[in-house]
Every structure is written in C-alpha cells, then in structure tokens.
Image (cartoon, rainbow, N blue to C red; front, side, top):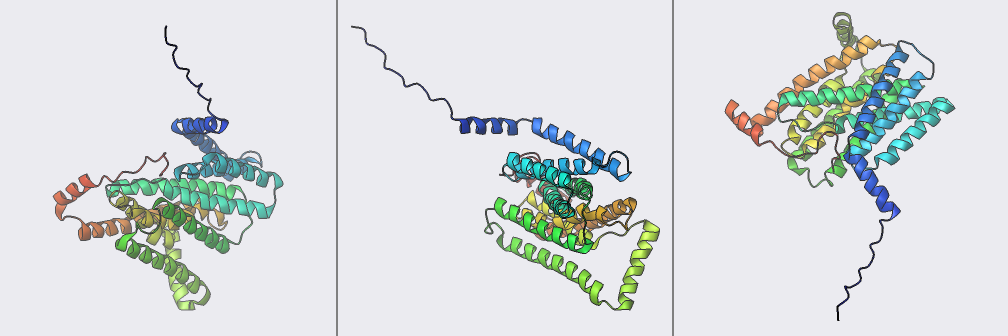
Length: 349
C-alpha cells in the first residue's frame, strides 16, 4: 500500500508590519533616497540663493528652507539610526505649517530647529581621517553642510535678538551632539581616562570662550575693549573679515582632531562633538543684517584656516606623545589606523 506524503502546513503570508519594515529596509539600502535628497537640497539652495539676490517670488525662501530642514532631519535620523521617514516627514509638515501660518514666533522656532539640526548633522556627516589632509577634508564637508543650513535658517526670516539666538542654538546643538555621541558610544564607559581629560578640557575651553566674550561685552574696560576692537577693525579693513574665536579656537580643531582620532580610537567621537562650536556659528552666520555676505563668507574661511592650523599642531602633539617617532614611524602608524566606521551615507549603528 503506497504511503501518503505528510501534509505540510501552509506558510503564513508576512504581516502588514513585516512587509512595511521590509520595504523600508529595501528603500534604505538603495541609493534612490540619497539621490533624491541631494537633488532636493541643490534645488533648495538655488532658490535660497536667488532669494538673497533678491530674485523670484516672495515664497521662494520659505519653500527652500522647508525643503532643507526636511531633508536634513531625514539625513540626521538616518545617520544616527533613527526613523528617517517619521522625522523627515514631521519636519517637512511643520515647516510647511510655519510658512503658511506666517507667524513670527513660529518662524523663529523653525529657524532655531533648522540651525541646530544643520549644526549636529554637519558633525555627524564626517568620517574617520587617517591623515591630516583627510581631516581637513572632513572639516570642509562639515562647514559646507552647515553653510546650507545657514541659508535655510535665514530663509525662515526669523525675528530675533541675535545674541540670544546664538546662545540658544549653540547650547541646543551642544546638547544634541553629546546626546548622539553618548548613544553611539553606549554610555560613558567608552571614554577612558584619556577621553575624560579631553572632554573636560574641551568643556573648559568652551565655557571660557563664551564667558570671556560675555564679560568683555558687559564689564570690559574701555581701553581693553578699544584695543580689541582696533584689531577687529584692522582685520575687516585689510582682510575683509575677522574670524569668530569660538570657531577658530575650538570648533574647527575639534573636528579635525576628532576625525583623526576616530581612525584610531572611538574616543574621537567625544572630541568631534565639540565641533558644533564651529558648525553652529556657521549656521548662524547670515542672521546679522549688519554684516555683508562677502564678510560672512570670508569670516568662515578665515576661521577654517586658523582652526586647521591649530588642529594640525594638536594632531602633531598627539602623535608625538602617543605614536612612534620619525617619518617612517608615522607611516607605519597610519597604516595600522584602520578602525572601521560605516560610510558617510550609512547609519552609524
């Protein structure tokens, strides 16, 4: 008597949630969202630049700013392992509501959000750098990302007190960057003694820079203020601009040294977090109506050049204290600096 084959239980079709998750994973793995985001940002930048001329309809800067904040929110969520569809769509919807309502308070809030998102994304978009030249490249990438955020920030046409806006966005950007780095490093245990010292030194430099500027503005003696202003005036008259101290002294060196350190030790992320001290001022650069566009651009360029010089000195000191001596030793050290990280367009975790 022939034996009948055993019955097989019919496989259940995947649930709706599983199908949606698989679709999102496939979309994330493709290059289509990246290409669409790049094209959208380029179009938005063109619209924002035209609005600065000014050329075009009155709604042009608002539309460009909405597109940039939507794409940047998507990119930041994707880079940090979040939910890009949710946060990108939410930012886009809020931006449209702000522009349609045309309320000064909402425009100012949208400008703050745009500035902070651009500053944090500019730091998160960097990758490890084995050599100083590659670290300089990462500095340029971060500044360019923040510069697009500057166009979008001013595109919302906020009504602000400049000093308060600068302090608020810098503080939120610092908190956001350190929150992301804390999450990426799974807490403080990955810092180590060396990382703790680095973070403390960076925090002291940040606090001293902000405190010195505020104390000088409020309580500085006329002679000291006049002497410092003379230097600023001379730089503006002969060089066209004056670099912002917090960008030159802390932010740019932090990005350069942090990316260089990330190729060797994960503590470099904690150093990179201080890079918002450069990217936040860049994202705020166009808000001062008393400063021309040319002076804004030159100020950022001078800050990058001075900061890279300081970063080069810090990196050389770090290698001298921790690495092998001599050119051959440096080449051997660079060959072994292969700590892996995801590519620039992939999630960090």
